Image 1 (cartoon, helix red, strand yellow):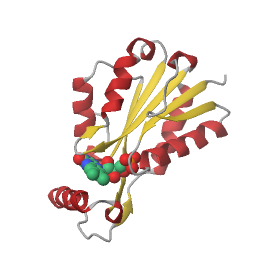
Image 2: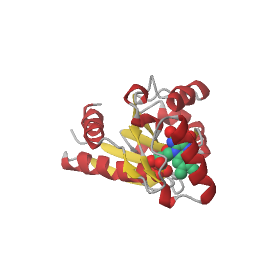
Image 3: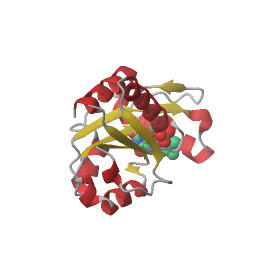
Length: 175
Ligand SMILES: Cc1cc2nc3c(=O)[nH]c(=O)nc-3n(C[C@H](O)[C@H](O)[C@H](O)COP(=O)(O)O)c2cc1C
C-alpha cells in the first residue's frame, strides 16, 4: 500500500537536506508519495500524512529551536501517525557514537522533550572548514582537536553513510 510521507527538515549548511533528498529518492523509487518541506515553511496539518519524518542537524550541541517548537505545536498529531526523527552531527562519525542510544545529542534531546517517534536514527554529517566563518572555523577546529578529528582547515569530508540512509528509507516503508 502506498503511504503519504512528509519529510520536514532543519539544515544550516545543506547536509540534512542532502540526506532528505536521498531519502525522498529511495521512497519515491518504492512508489511512496513524498512531500519535502523546510521547517521554516511548514504550516500544514501533519495528520494529512500517514508518516512524518523530522530531520535536523546539530550546531553547538543542540538542534534548531524550531524543532522543539514543531514538536510542541504538533504534539497530539505526532502521537496519531507513524513518525521518525533523525539527527545529523559530526560526533556521529565515530562508530561508538552513531546510534540513538550512544549519540550524546540524541540521548539528551529525548530527555528534554515529550515525544517518542516510532523510529530514531543518527547520521554523520559533513565537515567543510572553508564554508565556516572565522569564529565557527576556530570552534570546529577545537571540537575536532578534542575528539581526535581533522584540524587541517583544507579538510572537506562527507562522513554520511549513504547505505544507512537507504536502509532508513526501507525501514520507513515497512513502518
Ligand atoms: C557552527 C557549527 C557548529 C557545530 N557544532 C557541532 C557540535 O556541537 N557537535 C557536532 O557533532 N557537530 C557539530 N557541527 C557539525 C554539523 O552538525 C555538521 O556539519 C552537519 O553536517 C551540519 O548539517 P547541516 O548542513 O544540515 O546543518 C557543527 C557545525 C557548525 C558549522
